[in-house]
Length: 345
Ligand SMILES: Cc1cc2nc3c(=O)[nH]c(=O)nc-3n(C[C@H](O)[C@H](O)[C@H](O)COP(=O)(O)OP(=O)(O)OC[C@H]3O[C@@H](n4cnc5c(N)ncnc54)[C@H](O)[C@@H]3O)c2cc1C
Image (cartoon, rainbow, N blue to C red; front, top):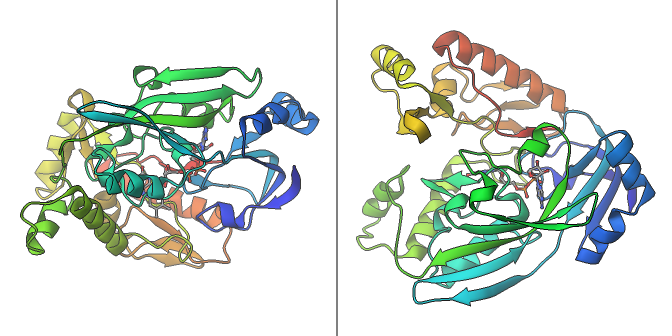
């Protein structure tokens, strides 16, 4: 266990933050030892300050000291569990880097994760907010999720249904909101398909393929296309601080959508669950005039208004202030409350 551990390299916003206690966990034994550690027990039971941190690509520390216990699960390993004519089941442990894992499945010609190429972070975090991009969500490839309780050490396996996945949400996200980290996801089993089921209709994927004369795309073409489009639109991790999409897309009723469509006929939209309509928050923020805005050390990415950036040397509060200004201005212009996608800790 380390004390006053610097987290600057472990949050992609790149804020200079420290953890009062920090421990990396490489094995299941490490987890069992952790739950007997007096400092850990104190942080868990007395002050309720335990944070599970993986790649830190979806976390905004609101203070410069995390006055609690940061647990860094980093178990490694990828195993094929089962293979049929149509599918392959693969287990990945939580510490594997997500984008490397996607590349591994794409190289094997297994369908299901190619649209999620190049999302930063680790495998263990992928189910937490049901990561999604380019018309795909990880929930469609998750078979089950293995967790270990941080009080009892008991293992619980969640079937896909028990994960209660929805848009950028799952049963694992609730403890984050209430700041009660109760269990670690230590492994995820994925079910991937051997036969082509490419999703090309979201974002610019199809246009990009056509423009590059790719008429019969392979899984590798799709993953490469997603990577190229992402690199054009998103800040590079380690170069400009961000957490990707800072806000969730707005989910509105059909009536609200029709009202806005009357005012802004060009408003983009996608169907969402339960007859709701998804409106890209990036469009709302852009239309409210924020794209490319900069104030001291922070700003709004000029190629994608959904992304708030930290140019270095700033404080978390600057991002929080900018977030509030943007939320207020979108609410005033469109009557929509946009919510952060990032976990504010
Ligand atoms: C440039 C950029 C682009 C991005 N693009 C996308 C995108 O297209 N789609 C998308 O969905 N997200 C995107 N993100 C957000 C982020 O990459 C994902 O949410 C990712 O899954 C976070 O992984 P992480 O390992 O960094 O998790 P962290 O940020 O460390 O943690 C995220 C949350 O999960 C919890 N957690 C982490 N690991 C575990 C575990 N093992 N067990 C239990 N709880 C855990 C944490 O407590 C925290 O609440 C992007 C981020 C950046 C910086």
